[in-house]
Image (cartoon, rainbow, N blue to C red):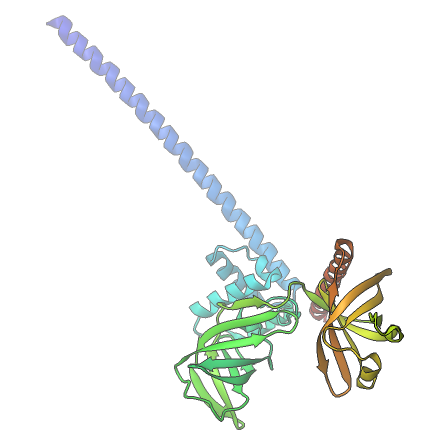
Length: 353
């Protein structure tokens, strides 16, 4: 019996020792985890503090008030976005500002306008796609449709929550208050945009009927062109391709007004139209220089736009070689980049004033 009791006592002692050792191991593991979590969060907090300090320094360099930096930092982090992107990318900036407007009933509209202006987000080149209805420029024309009836409109004004569309001709205007309407607008160098919105209010200002519609980002973009185009201004020599009347194959100098990888727009004084005698479907040769390189291409007239003083012809390139297309596309890309840099330079100059 004594041997049995001694064995039990020995077993208990060994078990207690093992349990104690296990508890010590668990404690050490938990301590290490807690230690690393504290260190990690401490380093994270230090990094956040450093990044915010750097961010606020950047805010100051961009001539923005401290309040603007606090707003952009707070709502960027709430959205899980990099705050620095809100200073460089318009789409990120607008997302952050929208969050601020939604959460703050007394948001500072003048401050937002000032931020947008100082960051260069108040102007969008015509070839850059829109990211929200806030990007639509004042006086942009469009059409509003409801139940098969459409009216011509133009953007009269806008603020951070609403856009105000002026009705051009209100003779057949139905009662649109609280109705969901369709809005269509065309940007010449970009695309067609389709969107829907609720008419919150209709009012008259200086004899103009105004429709008040909330801003939103849900827009359908329909690409009109296969290639992006850029405004230009250089001479182009053209000649009709006529096998039946060789006398018409003479060269005439005209002005190029825009170009893309798919075609070119040329314009002449209206008095010259009879001289060049181009109609839709006419095949022509085009000769011009692009960045010092001679371009000799074939094209077809696809549209004609007559104005009071000038007549312009849309020319589609025919049988364009891949090398020639690449040269034109590279030229367009470079010109677009120059325009972006010019816009940024203007913004930077504003910051220095």
